[in-house]
Image (tube, rainbow, N blue to C red; front, side):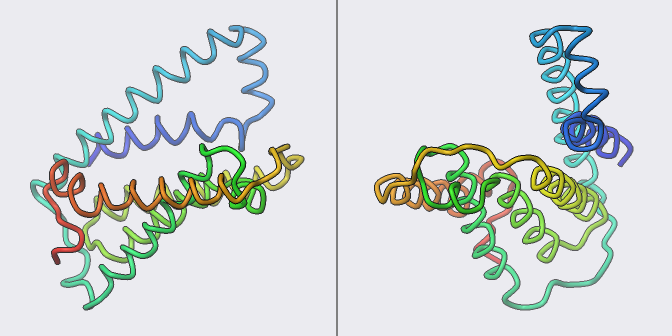
Length: 191
């Protein structure tokens, strides 16, 4: 569990610098240069992410179960939340969509829904650590982002919004029906 905790601290910690320590971040960019900062940021992120994967896989070998079972139907609620999360994740990258224009920070909202959905459907300490940490991170980052001036986004179009929906639903379907089971050994809709 220590590797999971260390990975979460590194990965989410470096991703919190803009929200919680903007002056320190600016000082590092001034000291190291933009490329130097991005290099360190990327290295810490990659090491943290690797430790999250390693730590979570190790924790799953001998799980500490916090409650005996997940109520019937919660997996379907999670699937719905993750579907919306996938659409919001697509909205962060597909240009000129109404979701990004309206919500301004769809990726952070996506992580929030993804993490919450996974928290309610899982029952081990490692799950609570992983998904709870990402939920807290997304809340802090969203709150900080809402304090900054709204980002300028291109005027949304119907085509951009439809493309966002198609990409988001496709992304969700790939994970729900194949990748989640292939990569993690868990079929989310097969419970």
